[in-house]
Amino acid sequence: MARPLWQGQIQISLVSLGVNLFPASNSARQVEFHQVDRATGERIHHQNVSAADDAPVETADIAKGYEYKKGKYIVIDPDELKKLRLPGQKTLEIVQFAKTAEIDPSFFEKPYFVVPKDETQAKTMAIMSRALRETETVGLGEITFSGREHLVALSPAQDKKRNGMMLYVMRYAEELRNWAEYFGKGAAPATDEKQLKLANQLIQHYLAPFNPAAFKDDYEEAVKALVTAKLEHKPLPKATPEPKRAKVINLMDALKQSLAAKNAPASHGSSAAALAKSTKPRKNRAAASRKGKAA
Image (cartoon, rainbow, N blue to C red; front, side, top):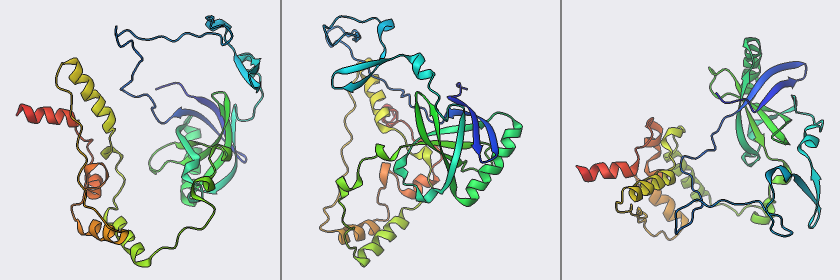
């Protein structure tokens, strides 16, 4: 288990929970590229240089600088940042609760596990988790880690049998771009009731429980196959041709044809029902192809 990102107390009115915070996602990718010299194959290293004269600067001489005016910086030492007394460094105070359905998904950014420090904390957390689940709410507050303050949402575990909670780092309102710049300020276009009915039927046709194991990173698998082929001096994998789709004149025809195609492929090459039933990750396509050729 990795080290906790944050340790402290979650304060909900007079209720206090001692917790450890761990990242719930793994951002590291298995396929990673480096910059190399095309002629020699040697890795390229970047050097820290001064903008004034391109002279190299030692790591010990590099500090953080805040640009207060164009091209003008004031140096801030790491120790000065550590001495800042910001709320949320040791205590996450839940200042309000909000209905989960009322929060736009675009505000949610990254998930974390909220792990109780001991059995007593776990019992208290189980009560609060169930209360949040039954009221369909999340607790909102602010926490400080990784050199900045974060807006966060405290959420119950979806699985009732799980001990623990989730914390989602959220974006502040000023971090989101203006909706009106992209969609305008006017009302949504009027909808045709017949088309709407068919659209609802189409959704029901592909409705299935979410099975995360059915979705895999096809790009990563393709890159691995490409690397393997180059290492073994084999022909490079050919690109999978796009499936041919019938030309549709209008939305009504598109909806009707979609509903008529009982075996119409859904996203990721499987029907929604197949995705729901599937519990095993898909096999590496490149490996399956090689196996088929060998047979």
